[in-house]
Length: 459
Ligand SMILES: *Cc1c(COP(=O)(O)O)cnc(C)c1O
Image (cartoon, rainbow, N blue to C red; front, side):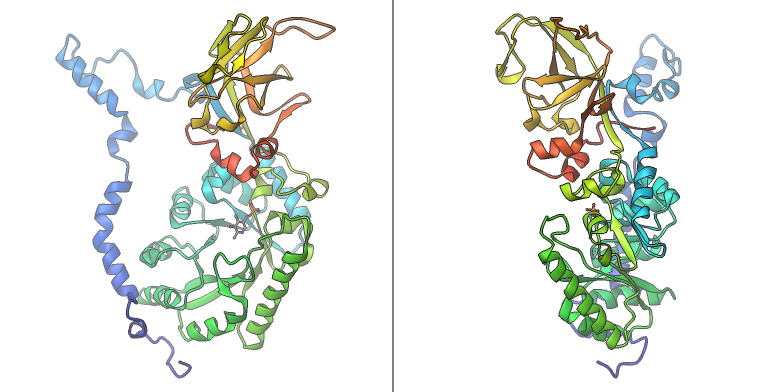
């Protein structure tokens, strides 16, 4: 293959199921109208909800004349979140700034920071948090697929964006059109991508994923040089970066991570010896960034820390992080429940008497995990109150002891009072880290779970 001329464009004969980039582009163009129709919200949706048109028609056929609506929908549509629904999440952008600065403090002056904003910014809203992170000192962004990248571009984000995996070949026109860099580990894919770029006189930058032991994606560390020999003839292809990912950076024992680091360095040395410039070299996620400065290379890729979470107990002594997400609700109903009567599905909780049971409009459909039933606290007036009964899809209950004893102040909760589901008030704190621990999972999953149904308020 070494004797192929630069700019060779006849690679399609190599593999029987190889689809040339030009074909891929033609096909995606042919499919485009249908796709864009499906994905574009109807213009009606943005001007007024469907129901509003229905309403106008109904009214015009009845006593009211057309256009004479009793409400100004444009105005009432914009009622703030806590006015529409008594459950919401708050994202503290100051905390995000603080966390970016904390990560930066642990980096050398020439080490770059790639902010990982996949999964809608770990459930915090990717466009909003990306802008703050870039402002606060992040250099680049990483996402997991082309849709996430396009969402950022459409929101006006201009920083370099890397997709942390190899997207389907049929999405290559989108990569080029939206100036999004793919991760690549398949030679035929690399050529398809380069061909498509070349067709338009563009460059085809990419990052090479090296598999050093996690066995998820990437070219095996001892085959990286071979990969580059296969693709480097193409004039459009540009190796912008080379990276690997650690499987055990959050593990107390550094042994496996060090083996991966060793394999990665072997691959880099091999590439350099063969005359290939690996570009921006990166490997460390949050745990590795804080725990192992010797694997920072040219850039670190942090997600978790920027949102204020710890990947493992070890980082608590090193990192100063503030959780950015809190979850809030207001009480929608209260009642005294006589002793021994049950509460919620299954009636598993029984009232001890002299308690007020308060209801809040948040449930597992919002991400408040049902397995936390009876095993999490809410906060009001800086004090903890026990969540009781099964957490329902859209609502759940908590208990307020109405007896007063000692110096403890008696609290009489009322409909409309604000309750903190996740967050802190005074010395009381309920954290996502703690919920993750109770549910035997990781904070990533809990944060992402606080779903889109909870509207986010940025503070
Ligand atoms: C998600 C991800 C990261 C970020 O990991 P954190 O633990 O959130 O810092 C970095 N690199 C890759 C490849 C990832 O998939």
